[in-house]
Amino acid sequence: MIKLKHKDNSAMMDLFFKPKSVAVIGASGTPGKLGYVIVKNIADSDFAGELYPVNPKSDEILGYKVYRSLKEIPGDIDLVVTALPTPKITVATMEECAGKGVKAVIIESAGFAEMGGEGKVFQQQIVDIAKKNNIRVMGPNCSGIVSRDIVTSIYPMTKKVPKGNVVLIGQSGLLAAGMASDIVENESLNISKVCSIGNKCDVNENDLLEYFGNDDEVDVISMYLETVSDGRKLTAIAKKIAAKKPVIFLSGGRTEAGAKAAMSHTGSIASNSRIVETAIRQTGMITADDFTELKDFAKVFSTQPLPKGNRVAVITLAGSVGVNVSDLCANFGLELPKLTPGTTEKLKDMFDTPVSNPVDLYFSVTKIGFTKTLETTFPDAFRDPNIDAAVLILAGFEYTQEAVQKKIIQKIVQEVGKPVVVCMIVGYNKYKNVIMDEMGKELPVFPSLISGVKALSKLCEYGIRKQKLSA
Image (cartoon, rainbow, N blue to C red):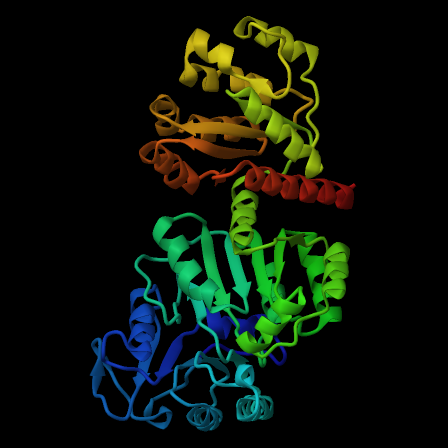
């Protein structure tokens, strides 16, 4: 069993993310049942400790011996995961956990504070038992944890979770179920852990933000909240963590309609939007407006170097696209400076018109082809000392595929050391899918201009802030 120091948040959180022994209460041998999925997900993860399914009516599940109760399990248990049919049985299980000396419990079933009335009473009983016995509780009404070391989600995982550098935290089963499965299956984001905290009757965003903020293997934290447990504490922790690594924040329940939905979803009284906005400004967290942005911004921050400023080169083959991106850059606080005389002189033979920004590669492509243009003309403009980052527009046609397969853009980004976002708005699906799916595993690729420009603006904003903090 993991040894705990009194009030040591890191050691307590290790019980959830690095347990040495896990009991699943409500385990089932019937495929499709939640108790079966949880046991199989844990078995299929890299979890190497002791796994104890608990069910009074079974003897064996997926090759594991089944115990009739917690009391029958020999030795200590670091973590209990429950998916029980009623809140009343869950409360009784909490008492059993206390008797067994368990210190960490994930409650995945619903029917508690989000239902109001009796559900709130049951949730308070869980809190009371937890406080009395020094037990930390994640949930209820959550999907638990998705990670390489352990998966407690009720949604079947099809692949191993990567050992990535991004953590997702949220009051959302969507994060640890649908989104996690999507990300793992499609390899669209290099996540390491996804954590759904549901009604967060005990473990909340502050515990996890502090835990992952001090984890050197985590570079980016993305967080979705419908309410803030302790605004003063969140502000203090987030300010400290956001100075070290990006914290991307999506606030739910910002409007009257959203607040009403949050109440029925997790039983939360949504946080005052002005308080949340003030906290975000004070802490340096990065605001996302929806779940797609929560993932997109994490992709940009986890794959691209931080820029020194907000001066952007727009690289395109279509004049109209350059015009549109220029407008978007202005809207999101990005500048399009002129390239230096040295760069324009170097590139003049590749253009029939004066070299400007946006950089229209059309003439270069007609002279030396698309692949050679990406290998030479693009990096020459990208290296310009007036440029901090680039928006590169690609089309999903056959002529772009050679450069995609050769991973030319990835090599240039690594060599130049500046960030790039790729936007794609036209093409045939068979070629567009290659760019989105294959290139998108390593680079931030966006299906619209506005999503790419907005993500880059957040990266520039954070880069500038970090420079000021370190000055």
